[in-house]
Image (cartoon, rainbow, N blue to C red; front, side, top):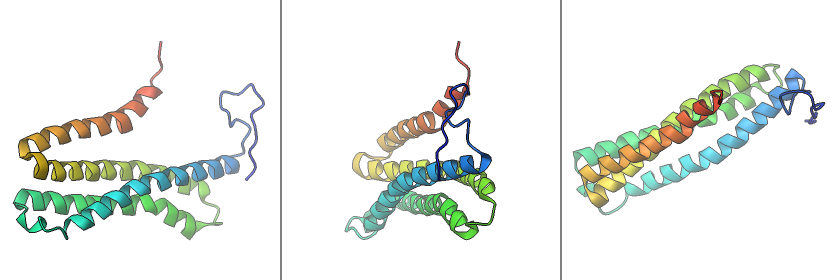
Length: 164
């Protein structure tokens, strides 16, 4: 993939790209971002798999078990959704639909981030419930959920708004 530099007068640093070059660059950038995020999914999934085999797992109450199951399933869904762009790329490689792959993959990445944020917060809820009790766990999880919402979803939208 060749990188074409802008002639200096355009608003975009990639202004001299052809649509095909832009699609290539966007796909490469998106797949790199997804590699980073998938590591987080794998860590949460490994943690959750290990939890079921601990000596304390049988002592979990109904709320804790439900939190565990929902969190595990959210992690599986996050993994599936975040890996779908890779599967799309592999399945449709050299079919002339890269721009469609990029557009769909960008939407899937956003959806996958929602599931990942929910899974991470589910893990926080489960762990904090066991360590600190339900009331503290709910308060802490509400704070971490607000943190994720602010950083991952509100901040990017705020940056799109024109500033004075």
